Length: 141
Image (cartoon, rainbow, N blue to C red; front, side, top):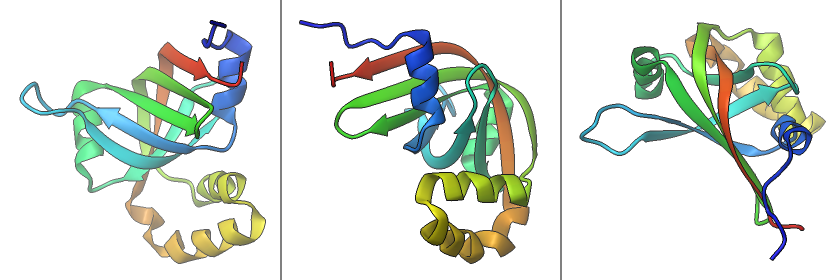
């Protein structure tokens, strides 16, 4: 059976691509991790940027525990999960968020989506995670 794990360059290019993403954060030892759909952005070798709602349980838990895992996938062929340490959380920059959306959805649908949420961006926070552990699968091999 061929190896399904990605090399460093492969996993970084994959994470930098266009994917659906979820962020997982441990709330407490009595509950399963909280999993939230998110927009994310990554440039190889950099920190992972994730946009989440300011008033959500996810942000509160992330600030408390200081760690999270982002998972992105290309169904059904591959996935990357990257665990990271919270470096900073800051108000979401609308122009940065717009670029994430356009990159994920394409120009016309991305612009429509961005315009539909633009007024709510003041409730968004961007968190920056320093990658520390990677789990990958590529089933195209």
